[in-house]
Length: 262
Image (tube, rainbow, N blue to C red; front, side):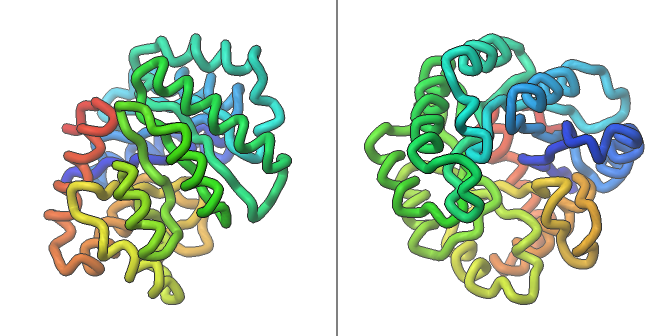
């Protein structure tokens, strides 16, 4: 089956010594494309550099550029100018990741909200979809998205961990919903109940590597090859085959990000 890992931080230092091996395992698992998002300026530059390289025989790499809410205080005019320049590269297909994180609160909430507004504006300006991070911030995220509006190119609520009510709101906003390794966790029954409400044509899958390795790899450093386990877990939730789920999510990734998936 053909798979797209729609969110994998291959720009993370953990992968530098063995990136070729990681990509080879992904290809062997059927992964045809991987989206590498930035989380600050340096990782955004690295994502673009990875996507621009020729990785013969490996999945196609694409980049997104943005500043994670943990680092929202660095999202000033100069930083936005750098992101704007990076967005001109043909392998950059989205803005992000950006959003709100009230669990860690590593940046003041008003700074996070301002940074998200700036990323939304940048996505509208460049006609790119937006990749949204959300942790313990449902109400403010939805309020801000309704007030600001999404880019015409749409967006995705990545690494979805909410309930059915949040899934319904995300769908009403025309967002895609992306499932990660948590869908395989024993204690994730409420998440599975939410994900079953999302139509097949609005689903993506991801690893969020190096985090959230799925069962049976839980506790290890995650990698794109294991997006196959996410596909199997989500297929079970939807009562379909992994092959059908993989085909749907691969098509959705191609449509949202405008990428080749096979």
